[in-house]
Length: 418
Image 1 (cartoon, rainbow, N blue to C red):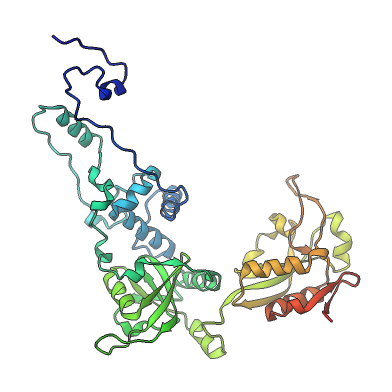
Image 2 (cartoon, rainbow, N blue to C red; image 1 turned 90 degrees about the vertical axis):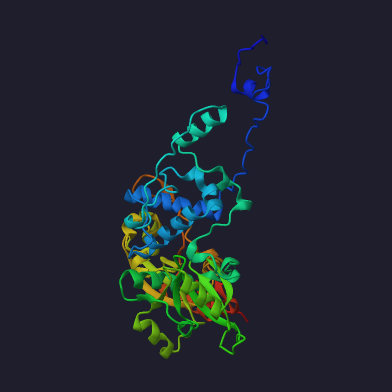
């Protein structure tokens, strides 16, 4: 009888050091899968779904009336139906969401039963039985090259939908999407089933694959083989990507998406076109000018002289931005007054802030203050200028001719460059 060596570890078993008869020769260690980048888009989106589950105690439902929950629900449904995406985020699935059917309606939930094992006659039978008891998924789902199953309502979507790219001027659209989301939640804007390609025109919003999308402009006029109008559109999605797509291809995608919708906007939004505000003139935010009611001794002189103002840029309404000023060091932990507010159109927020800081660099308040919690901090975006000077700076930034002016550091006034 052959000598038998007691194994010291599982590696000894696999290596064959304690298997003189070669019973386990055919067993090979499973190759490790390459992990996805820690900051991939899919992983970030799944973490948002996890955050919803942690916050509410339930998975998001794609049929919810709340637009944010609907989007998260649609994304979860996509993860559940796409093996490649599921594998990429499986290590993040702490709530078992990938295996859950609760994102769908209860009527569609299916009971699952463990397979009944036949007579155990081999080591493979033991492994197979253990796999069933431990809830192992079919390993073929990790063999991405063999996956042909896709979301049923996205199987025939055009390539243009899949081939999205980052929208480099998304700052022009952020406020549009935010306003539309608010209108949908407040029921000022209505959603309706998509019925005809004639409903697709530049300036319109739709919901596709759980995401708001905006038809921005016509890139190229054209017709299909039957002579039907079929221009190529630039379409922007609320997650910061865009695609160039034929009108009829977009219509087909909306038809095939069971949750596809068109948005019927608030009438006041439509009226903007009659007020000279075209789609190309987008209110991307506003420059606001504030005065503070701070009681900080270090700022008393500037405050009494009327030369303590905050100049900032916001894509929110100013009132929304400052509603918690008394508790926010950004606003000196004190009530503030709005001195002026100027709407900005088609401006890059980062460039606006850079221009403000650069133009008023010498006037920036450079004082350390102790917060109510005893933490020292330096005020940000507070400047030692009066209201009129601050308004003049803001106006020239909006007009786009601020480079023709400079600050006179002696008088503290704005002057035109000679």
